[in-house]
Length: 477
Image (cartoon, rainbow, N blue to C red):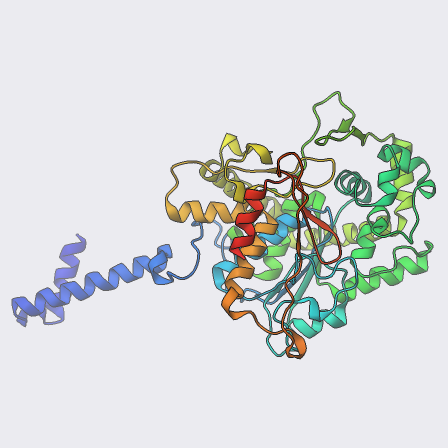
């Protein structure tokens, strides 16, 4: 039927008067145009060979499921990556989105923007002065300092961040920073710390900010101030003034729906796997066990949970304020509409899990991941879990799946290498050459199998990895 209609159109166009050669040429042009059209529809990789592949979207009856009509996607984005709030998963979304579209990242000289010191623009690699070379996306750890961020990012930048219940955050922070924060190191368990935090906490000691009002600190606010409602109101107002959207980690899927609408992104851009997750102890055991470390109990009574909220009162009131705002945003968005988009998001995640991941998508210990280049960084007393990819994936699918599970440190190094090839190291602000930090500090123990790498401020980045693994990492730089 289609061919008969085409024949009629060709006769109408007078094609019957053309000779055989011209008819063949016209057919070739029609076929070529159809091929181009199919390429547009299915987003074939040959159209943009220099960009990474995306896993194509599932079909949806909802026209808003993957695109958002006529709005233009935000490409100038600043994400304040707060600690232990699922922020590594969010950063992975930004890395993927920017990499696929060839955007320019504001990357730290090391792995953090001078944290725990307040952010300054000079900590951005390639920074040459206010607005000399604008960046598109910023998202690595920093202590927020808006005037300095504005020197780096464009005026139309979309600012957002994420919060978590301070008690859950304290549990994660204690497990992760047990050997970093003196207040945690001195306490035998989190419950013991909660019972009498002043016994262990000294605000003058380095890295003790991890032990009290950590989110308040990350937002650039004074976390040691005595609690008052007036102080809380000023802090909440400052966050509202500086950030257009605050996500809540306990409601991650709802957060992703709100984020993608705020940014005018396709739904696929916010589909993710949970990264930097910690291993739970089997039921019946009350603590966490790290390699060559004594148990560090995290069990808390209801009374101790209440004490932790009181101890982190600034964080607790900040969380309450934006949890309320969050659900107001959900109500404005529409509950049924939210449920529909969350269902689609979860379906896409389930499909990608089956396509991409081994073991049914369950995260596994880093030591069991055969590809050493995607083993997550290990810290403290917890085991940070990662993923393995399915075997037999075609190259495009393998690449797209790999981006979804690539750990934060390795992803940052990859983007750094692409933006700043070794032969083209840019000068820092003022024309001075960039001093490569961090430096590698090797602590060879038991046959040279233990290595420690520290950031510029002494923060340990790598621990208990083989020299072979990190040597290959250094060569990539």
